[in-house]
Length: 355
Image (cartoon, rainbow, N blue to C red):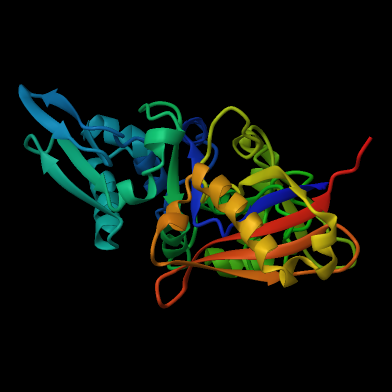
């Protein structure tokens, strides 16, 4: 019998962004970065950061109001602080714009003295918080869907704060498909090239501003310590990295994360007969069954319930199958008759060296 190591690493597409509330509070307290006249990305992020995670109540002017998950009841003065505005018409204009674009819903209460708003689809994207993250109002984490971020960007020009959030939301770390991401969290616009190279013309088009304005945004964010960048050798463009404390939100060791947001990586040891391996992994049905049984047990324990569903199927694709080790495969989990892809994993199969 020979001992083998089976490593399972999830390949993700980052459908959601994990946002630390201290990060949002830090941005709110920086008056040097402008927020006015933007696309609403900053305001939507701040509103999402302060909603409730469980049903509570609040009394205003002698009336008790119930606040459900994904909602917040606040006075006008509190709303001014959240949105960094000074007038009521400015605050209501921002809320009305986000409501018209179907991102939030809000009502004016107490004769115009307070506002109650709700983030649409909040529980759908933050369902993991009940188990995986702190749920306090002033600390912890929440999740923003990348689809909402994409819809907010592209229709209007971005403010300096919107540009910073766009860079932050499109940052990846320790992803072997993206160059330079192992060194530090790097900005990558997910263009399937694997190269995190940016240029001011590309950012100008994305932010709906001129190339000179995009360059000014980058320079100001660099001067304030939010980012730093390096010129690429042999190519026109920059590689942008995060600065300040922003990198700490990617290097997390004390908080369990949702499986859809950070690649999961586990490994297990197997004892197999060396004679059975002569035909190759993909050519031995019984060996496939042994390994898939182990994989299903591991993934089920990590929160993937697909293996117990009747609609579940999978596809195992060989990347390499030579005499050399390690041998790699791609496991795709499928759902339903249309074979909708639910998750993708890379399997690495290598022998354990004996001392």
